[in-house]
Image 1 (cartoon, rainbow, N blue to C red):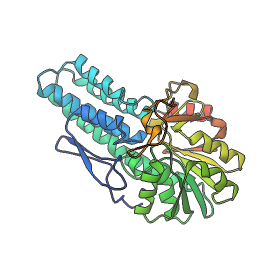
Image 2: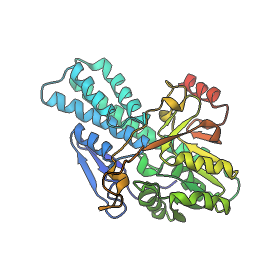
Image 3: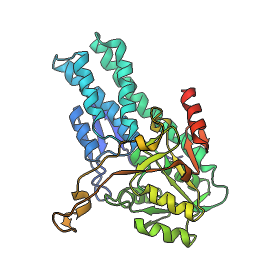
Amino acid sequence: MKQNSFTTMKWQHNCLCLLNQTLLPATIEYIKCSDYLRVIMAIKRLEVRGAPAIGAAAAFAVVLGAQELVRSHQFSWQKFLAVTEEIKAARPTAVNLAWAVNRMVAQAENYRAETTALLKQLEQEAMSISSEDIAVNRKISEYGATLFTKPLSILTHCNAGALATVAFGTALGVIRQGFQEGRITRVFADETRPLLQGARLTAWELMQDNIPVTLITDNMAGWVMKNKMVQAVIVGADRIALNGDVANKIGTYSVAVLAKEHGIPFYVAAPLSTFDFTIETGSQIPIEERLETEVTTFGNSEVAPKGVTVFNPAFDVTPNQLVSAIITEKGIIRAPYSREIQQLKNEG
């Protein structure tokens, strides 16, 4: 699988450079984050987004936070933990964020009184999280492509590509691999209101790789399925419960319901870091609600009457019975998900 023509993030000279995804596709611009608060801001603003990418960025934010404390001679374990809690609070739904920060804290435990060694260990761990994500995406892509035994068209929602990870992508990684092997011929990308991640990001990514892509509005998905223009759906995930319920970008649940109605398989591609082994069902997943202006404006123009009440959840939860299979770096799992996911948990 070839390397992407762009880089979602890079760590250079104690600075995290993030591709500003809010400016795509018109502008390719990198944000230089030399302190942890700037990384938190980038996560909140969706300048970096996608569960695996958020996790990797958060890991480097921990490095930057520890460096700042040491540099200012203010390092204490309590202050370090306060920084990590601040990072974890940046966005509530994507479990990869807390997973990455907790992993960094676990590494730091043995170096509380040795700040030089602690900083070195933290940087190494963040680099490991980043490089592991690339390897994990490759595995997911290889396993996922085997689901398609004959050439077909596929529909995806939001963006679960290289932009949502360190490289390659989860759902789009499967699509890239499938296209390379002649198993996938075309992709239909939902625009993904209200922030248009499908239109701005997924369509752009696929065009960068010369993969045929057709952009549709979210409310066209059912008609596309009815007219047999797609034969499968694949999406990413932000959190998966022990029973296989899946939290993903708002609108995913609707796509899953439509896929079920039309007899089309609905696949989820996600790394083990996206599984939350501490919750039983999707009803326990916290759902982030975002600003009203994301719904009431389009670009710089207001498109709704002033004062209208807005409900703007960033994610929804697809119940496990609508999920045909979940693709992980350990392989493809199917219902009964509780048993399969428990086995993944036990294997560590």
